[in-house]
Image 1 (spheres, rainbow, N blue to C red):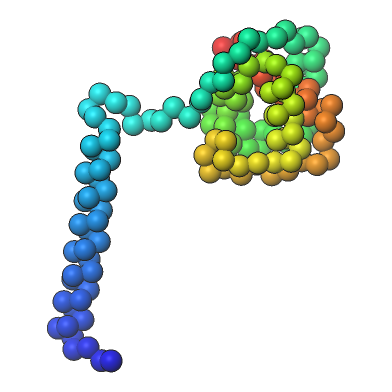
Image 2: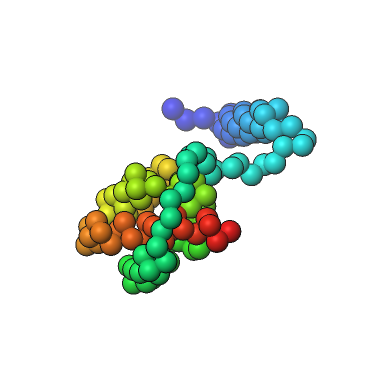
Length: 146
């Protein structure tokens, strides 16, 4: 089907108009959801309640070294979000308990996604469970330094 030049221009104009109306509606919806006083930054740290257990200083020190050698700093930083969440934000979310140490250790080994938005953490199957637990203890200990 061949359209005349005028018909094509009218069709393109209507398409652009329709898309701009959709965009305006989306902005209005966002304004309705966020009132003037609300922050636009979402708090992505959903703190899990629980008491922190003591972690020996030598375990924390070993975990810090393991993280450096494993290349974790390629995607993470201590105090600010990079490709992945900041280690301090992970520490703020989870209490220092064996269950969460093991959860994080399994994520270090198996990888994962969705806990911190869209970033995907690649698996690290070469890291032993014991070393991953030590690394997790280092990360969890960072909240106490804050």
